[in-house]
Image 1 (cartoon, rainbow, N blue to C red):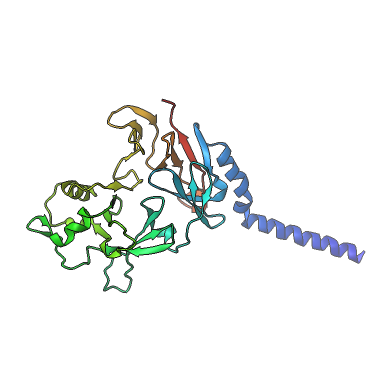
Image 2: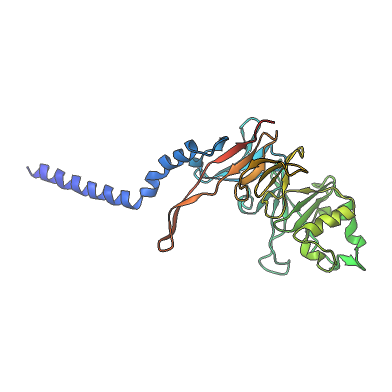
Length: 311
């Protein structure tokens, strides 16, 4: 009898413990059914690239042939090949997730600090080469003497050849930065530069955002590529420039013909390489959210391909 009573007491204790565990851990218990629901009940004309159950963070890669993916659930980073759906290994770099901006499938700009070399918190800008895992330091023209980028309204000849001799030039509107890479940039890191638009402040050009940087390159007849997918400061043309995506939808380039009528401001991540669609990710949400309770238990959504209508 005593053993039976002891068992009943133990069962009660375990039941209470289980109840307490469920009360405090109910978001985890709901995770799998809810993330599967997000994958199944997704917007029309879409297909899944990365499941919500992976808790994904993604960034666009110019050209649309790959997508940078970080799986929060597994703590894995890789490039998703959009042609084959294979996961490409990429070198592990501590700055890649928080500070990485893709310039191409092989090159990533690792953003440096806003402060200068005299500050203890200074961190240079780098180019991370995914083919070998090496970093290449960028020369920040903001801090390079002489500190006069322009003389008498014209570009200082000391700086001119950084741009005219560059093999690749990239403009990133969100941070108002221009990056110029020399031919054989791995062998000549001293010729690779980054230019903040703030350095152009002394020049009387009428424009906004990174348009000053664009105008400067056009005046020098230097080709450049815009690598900002945010849609806040620039529209993003498709790989062959047939379409363009704006905050309110997708259009035929150079026309007002609307192809997809959808708010893209928060959702667009990248073009798809063959222009059959765009990479699309709706923002996550909180399981509990309110003015009194605050926001708790963030929950992800899947990364999708939003298909374009057949031409």
